[in-house]
Length: 502
Image 1 (cartoon, rainbow, N blue to C red):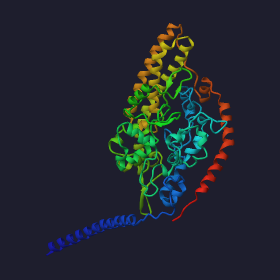
Image 2 (tube, one colour; image 1 turned 30 degrees about the vertical axis):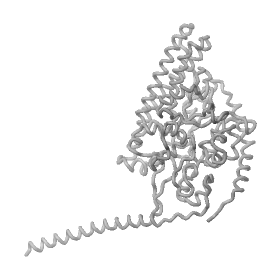
Image 3 (cartoon, rainbow, N blue to C red; image 1 turned 45 degrees about the vertical axis):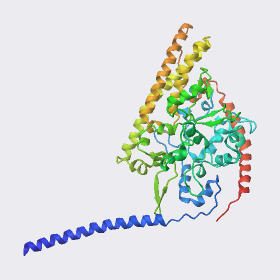
Image 4 (cartoon, rainbow, N blue to C red; image 1 turned 180 degrees about the vertical axis):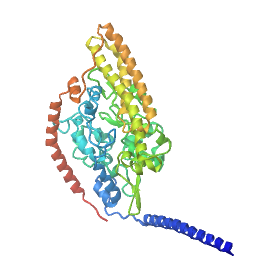
């Protein structure tokens, strides 16, 4: 009898704990069902009628408030990781060697860290690279420079066509391109589906024998970024667009550093001629998408948005955060979705990869500075063009490989192995250039050429004879004169559009 009572007690306790566990999991199930029900019960009810290429982000915000409010957080520039982030930073001051490497090009005047999409219009207006033209149709940069700065661009391209949009100098479009990068750049206004609004990406796919319309939704979560975060150049020799600097991606034969260099070498294209070495230089832009594709995350099927625009929840609603920033700012919702290591360990993994690539890239920078300075010494000594031909080709190749790794955002983390390989190619090219230069200089009776004192940005700019005070005054006068006019014209134009409410 006693044994039966003990057995009954044990069974009762087991039933009790089993019931508690069952109730717990039923509670989780009920909570999950409630959340899913809340999500399913959400009905999109637009307040504002959006046109096909509505550029005003605040109007999109009327219809998609959660996404818009998260996007406004891109105005926060307080995040700083070990290497950049979105905090303001003068990259020429941090690395004065860049001034010499870009001597003869606008980047030697001004190169600030990118602050994010929210500041796209402000930053292109303020940078010294766009100069201070006396008239809106003057200045060094073409209208093509606006291509990735604003949702006004798809609107204007739809109205006049890409080639017509690219015509003329950048200042002439100042009153028309006023809305910072936003909703219409990537989304359909009626369905919010992702879409491509820049013809250059579509044309690049066509040139390489692919059809972008066949892209999956997951691929589109990277391709909308690839409209701008890519290597590109301004093709001045298109037969169908004469006298136009036509935005083009050099993807015809592939997206590696070597295939794009071969493409450029075949066409003879150069962004500028170096002021010291007279090398026809290629300025890499920001081949983020191309480099991302060579990394482990792309191999595992991730998209840009998975890490830079993680899913978040608010009031039972799940949506994509549009605060586009380094994943290191929000490791819990980015890295730790897949990885189980601590935040400290994951952050350390990123920095370790970045440090190792930067270490060898810095060595390549020094070699390139020496090559440019030594080439100038050779020219000054009277070395002929024929003798310098191979030197210039090696310097051109080396600087392309260096810039391919330096210009991309996050390249050292996205694909550290590939970046180390490309830097190695640059080291080989720069060494070949310097070996030939050593022979030419010795033949000309010149010994070792001293490395310049470029320990600060100011010293580096003085070394390449940049009149910085004059450039700053010209820019300030231009902004003071033209920006109020642009803003007034833009306000008048947008007021004429009106707003239609449902």
